[in-house]
Image (cartoon, rainbow, N blue to C red; front, top):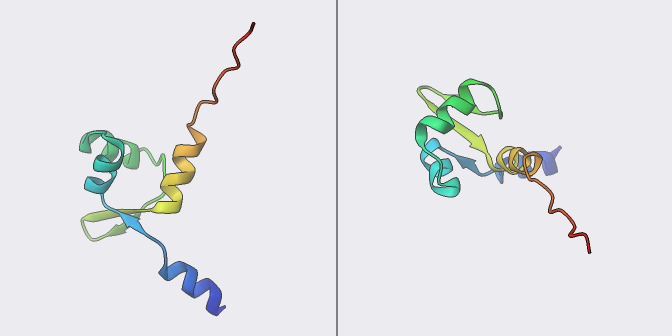
Length: 71
């Protein structure tokens, strides 16, 4: 149980402005994604936060694999 609590404390959270900076996407684009429920977030009053691991999973799911060149 202690290990799980330690891991949860180590979570990193991103605000919308952090998401903008990391991905170079607009605030409105991120707010629309969150409103559509594309990725999980935590609501703290008027503020929202996204866990780093949730953002990484969301980005990984959208990564297009590189195509092999045919000779």
